[in-house]
Image 1 (cartoon, helix red, strand yellow):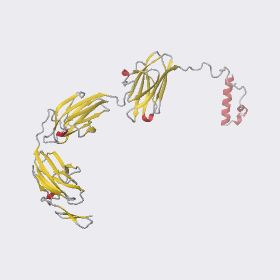
Image 2 (cartoon, rainbow, N blue to C red):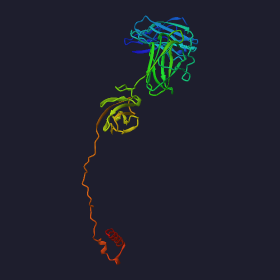
Image 3 (cartoon, rainbow, N blue to C red):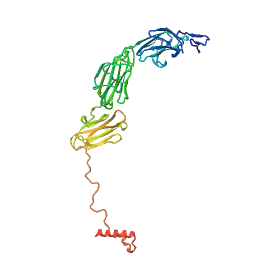
Image 4 (cartoon, rainbow, N blue to C red):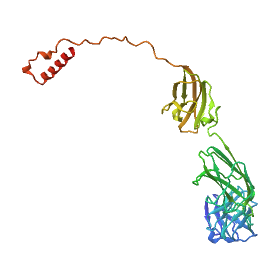
Length: 439
């Protein structure tokens, strides 16, 4: 099969030798934006689309225009697509791409005046005849109604926000978001104070999206669905200021902007989940620990109180995998004075300490470093008899010197004095010293 094009006619050559003609219409040639046919608001036209032969139309828009376009066709085998293009004639602003020729772009808002373009394109024609498809198209252009500002303006930038002093439980109704005019709010959050932000609106009146950012304008979380509600939940790992950006993604009707409500909830949560002893992050919140083995989870520091008996050994062992995070083990007296610690850079820690009084002691398991949100560990506590040193000496003491002093003169004394050399002088000195001790 081969194709042959003319400005107004496309011929499709079949293998049987005859050609079928794709009909032209009165708007040809309008195959590009330079040759686009001019349309006005309220106009309905009848046209014909051929494969590989797009149709272009130009529309003049004032500022804050709302454009609606519909196409229909009675040819069931044709699939016609519809595009709304920017002033450059190529950038797609909106489109409708169903598998039929009944396409629709509804209430598309265009803020800037200028010449914009409509393009229709025959995506497929399964009839096999190559004759294209006739279609009807209507264009409606209106001016959008003004967007009303809410009492929290001007909160339209990262540097100009509305501060919500008490974030938890905040509920603000009757807010308004306008085109090219974002809304910004900020909150002061504590470490591990999880925030949930919810906005409700009517999607048919405009699509609204939200984004949460930190003090450095980094994106932390966002929600950009096509539903009537957007919601984000975020757990901050440090105290600070956090900012919420509310943005109108698109207009869906002839009224500029959209109304919405804002709901904020916060709660302090444990980022790695709770064990049976939480909360116990400080010595004041230390939880009572009985003797035995306990499976726990560390996020930062865990504090425990134990009862010990004077004269018995306080034996503690901490079992964990160092590759998941480094834990240290510390023992304190009832006043918080450190008594003993174990702080290696290997798996597991342990310590033994003889209790100097009967009563309360404190145990701290501190998370020094971690490669994940939390580090699981096992803490064992028991009391045992203090190991005493043996009372029997390891060897018999003796009052006798291990060697008897020699009464015999040194062999150096046999050296004649007239043959003294350096060695002779040394030996003489040794003999003299020996004689003095024996006296």
